[in-house]
Length: 102
Image (cartoon, rainbow, N blue to C red; front, side, top):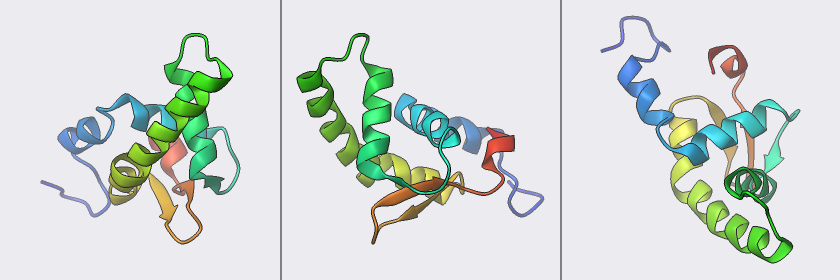
């Protein structure tokens, strides 16, 4: 239960941050200024997932991650107000104030 609008419960925070793709995405977005193309974010997440990325392996994994980010992880982060997701432009940006709370 939330007592203050905009405040997250511990359960909500743990749920949002429970998947490593979402954590990787937030770290990557914190290091960028402005909106980031979802495909570029997927490459960042894929690089964090692979020990020694090869070009072919990275491209394949990044494509799989991009689909997962689009359908599952970025919407969940947007619903929790960690990011802003522009589906028309297919871009993601860190939500104002998130850098202090993550």
